[in-house]
Amino acid sequence: MTVASALLSTGLALGLVAGSPAMAAENATLSLRKAIAAPDGFADVCNRYDWACAAGSKGQVRGKALLSLAREVNNAINHQYRQVTDRSQYGTEEVWALPTSSRGGDCEDFVLAKKHSLIEAGVAPGRLLIATVLDRRRALHAVLVLRTEEGDFVLDNLNNRVKGWQETGYSFLRMQNPDAPHRWNAVFKGGMFDRART
View (tube, rainbow, N blue to C red):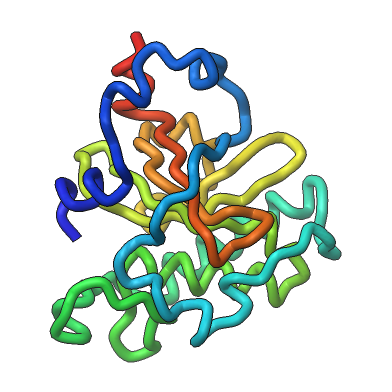
């Protein structure tokens, strides 16, 4: 998916962002806006991986142990697989699948592997939300957002450090809805969205 098509499919218009009082206050949690179409490639993820779209806020891992586990999983998966494009691996764009042990995967594949590992380790699925962003170079990218009592943190295949979403410098486009993860919502927060308001 190109950056232009990503922006168009999310309904991005600077008018949605600039001057919006609801967007003015910075906080530790990404707030969701209107319902929006899921990213290209996500269409059959819920059918193939039911855990990827599971809801629920009850989990065995909480507090400081949650962030510690997230750091371990982020680092382990970033080192376990090598990055390879969908075009190289599948001969087409936007295939969302778990990374293969022989070839690796791209950002969406790393996100799925991290989400699966954390759910298996006892993290509530509703705390693990896939998000699409524009990275600092304004390239389309996918990350895993971990929702904690302290705020939202980002697990990223481009960085071994788990960061608060504001620290990434990313422009958050859309994210899974925590109450119904098969649905997606616009976010329009961070990066260029914050600069557009100043």
